[in-house]
Length: 138
Image (cartoon, rainbow, N blue to C red; front, side, top):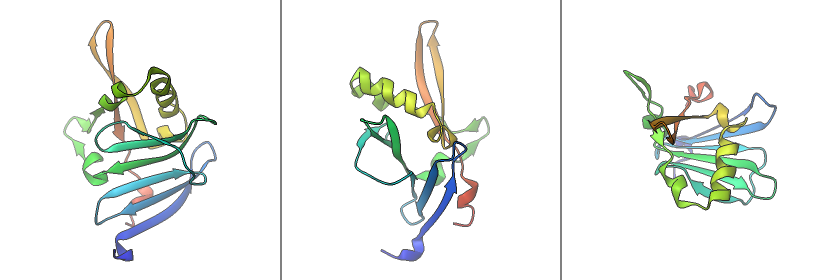
């Protein structure tokens, strides 16, 4: 694979966490690593977004975004949003952990979480991917 198709940069999240962004232009994949990369449990959030967490520390390890440029395109109504439909396939305790991780820094600096109100008693969690100014040079 051509190394010129990769762009890598490091930034600091708003909570002080070191973050490494690795973008593969050719395959349009963004990987966001929080702190040191290590083994973890991967959870598919959507067909295009995967979160890896450390179950012991309950901290995020990374987020992988497939088709990054498409997922961050703005529409006439704002950012493209995606239902977290894959969360329905994981055990309830893991689902709660994932939702908690998604709603805390540093993850929420990159993935924004909201919900669609289906009815007065039913909500569907949705996300959108925040465009990354640090990747403008890519």
